[in-house]
Image 1 (cartoon, rainbow, N blue to C red):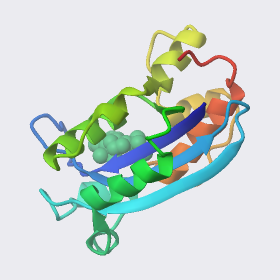
Image 2 (image 1 turned 45 degrees about the vertical axis):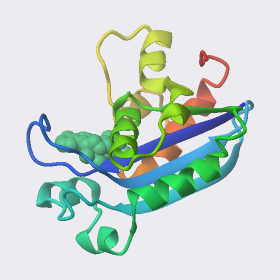
Image 3 (image 1 turned 90 degrees about the horizontal axis):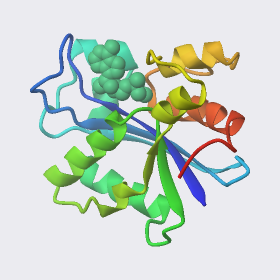
Amino acid sequence: MRFIIFDLEATCWEGNQVGRNQEVIEFGAVSANQLGDSMSTFKRLVRPEQNPRLSYYCTHLTGITQGDVDTAKPFNSVVIDFMEWIDIEDEEYLLCSWGDKDIEFLQSDCRYNGIETEWLHRYIDLKAQYHSIRGLQKKRGLKRVLTFEQIEFEGSHHRAFDDAANLFSLFTKYRDMWMY
Ligand code: AMP
Ligand code: MG
């Protein structure tokens, strides 16, 4: 099995995001084998099309600038690269992310761009599984969990690749525990 530990950043605004169409602006992923060894990585910015101007709030949260996304390729191009990098034709892969938001972002942007979503069904939520493994009722964010696990968070939180790489550290710590 190839585990695709991934994270996305998306357009966002201050306050409640209800009714807002959040689009992916960054992909970050690490692929790992059953032993928890990293095999390759994927890191890409994306130019949003429905709301091409990033809010100040979004840039402040993520550190992703308007210039970063203006020079990036749009979702339909980057997601094809992502699907190729995963090698979705070889079904021995499993998408793994922290919470179900990331898979929802992908579903939404794939639908908007007329891209099939079947490949997103091979998916597990590491956040839900982690809370169940540790018997935690109250949901904790990734950064807090890493502190709790005494794993140092490396890089910038809310950058897709750094979030994915840190999630990969947690993934390897519990590599025999994930259910799929
Ligand atoms: P994360 O993987 O935690 O960096 O979050 C992914 C995306 O969720 C971000 O790029 C934002 O679009 C959104 N998000 C995360 N945290 C917040 C927040 N505190 N306020 C608004 N949006 C957020
Ligand atoms: Mg993130």
